[in-house]
Amino acid sequence: MLRLAATAARTGLPIGASTLHRLAEAAPELREPWPRAALSELLALLGAGDGVVDVVEALDRTGLWGRLFPEWGAVRDLPPRDRQHVWTVDRHLVEVTRRAAELTTRVSRADLLLLGALLHDIGKGRDEDHSEVGERLARHIGRRLGLWSADVEILASMVRHHLLLPHTASRRDPEDPATVERVVETLGADPVLLELLHALAEADSLGTGPGVWTPWRATLMGDLVRRCRVVMSGGPVPGPSPLSEDALDLAQRVAESGQPEVSISGEGELTTITMTVAAPDRPGLLSRAAGVLALHSLQVHTADLGEHDGVAVDAFSVSPRFGRLPEASLLREDLVRVLRGSLDLPARLAAKERDYDRPGPAPAPSRVVWFDDEATGAVVLELRTNNRIGLLYRVAEALEGQGLDVRWARVSTLGSSVLDAFCLETAEHAGLGPERRQAVEDAVLGAATGGHAAPAS
Image 1 (cartoon, one colour):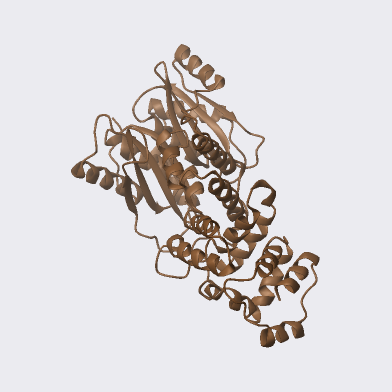
Image 2 (image 1 turned 180 degrees about the horizontal axis):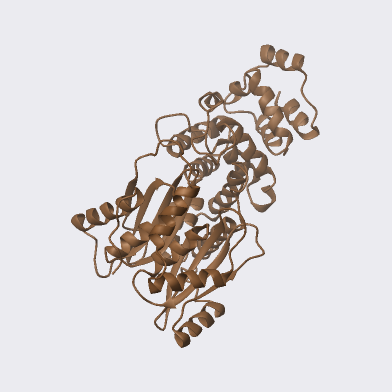
């Protein structure tokens, strides 16, 4: 059966209905562990590229795929939980496998990449964390397929940690040694596992839906993987990158003129560009800059905050919500007006929200989660809430009103919900005790849900 399926997928020829029915009635069960020939034919099927989709669907309709993978029943026709996914979970698994077949020359273990792609979400459809359930199922399936014990463990680890790289790259600072050390420790300093997870993350994004895998996401993840490889090879943890020459020139102009400056780089890309805002360092600059960007319909993905000789140099990765990028001169003009107090930013954003935000599904409860060991000399606050125009502005204003310094921010948008991560300096508020944290949580949740955030001093 598997040999016929692999041939059909490779040639693009369909398997006849009568043949499928005969196989369903008469094909013998594979003994466990599978013979090596059966595993080889499965891998040939999974690596066939576009043809794998129709063949797996045909096998599944006649019950043959379920006989090979009884665990498939829990994900069959299972709808996705977020709007980024355009496929049901079972179809997503096959689409990711198809995409992974295009990346097999980039890894040393193409067989494990294909199997990891097929199984990475196999734990969905159950009440527990799907990565933890999937790890157990992958270990069981790996043994059934006849993999070596060491390969079974790698496959199980791929399924358990398939979200580690994309989540870390988009929600933490890859330049922070604590971030790199945590990833390396989690993966047991295994460069093969790191390589496989990197390729799987790309295939997973490509198999999710259009626009999920972007040059910006690829750059973030590539930087994280590069830093982890250095540590895994015995090198020192790479430190943060210095300010670029362009950023230093911008800071110098601000130091001489005392006026804010804005520059845009990467305008030739289709998705995310970098916008650098330089201004005399003062409390409240992050929130005001974020508010101006929201006013011009720019969605912020990351914000990295730096300083040079008394000048704040804040780099924002942004993309237009719609339309074209605004001119840097317009952003600078509005930022100057906001800093001078001649532009009522809260009122303008509220009007924009009324004009452009549309009613969506019932909002989920907002939540704040703290992480104490994922940043050097700082804590990370994650806000999980519903998306709205100017959200970063309001939350940054709330944090500034609490007297907290933000080192960086990361914004992950998932349909109508977002996960915003803020790295908060703790030098003046060592540990941020329970009462202090509660006050910060109340301010952040109030800002996220429409309450009034204390203004920055």
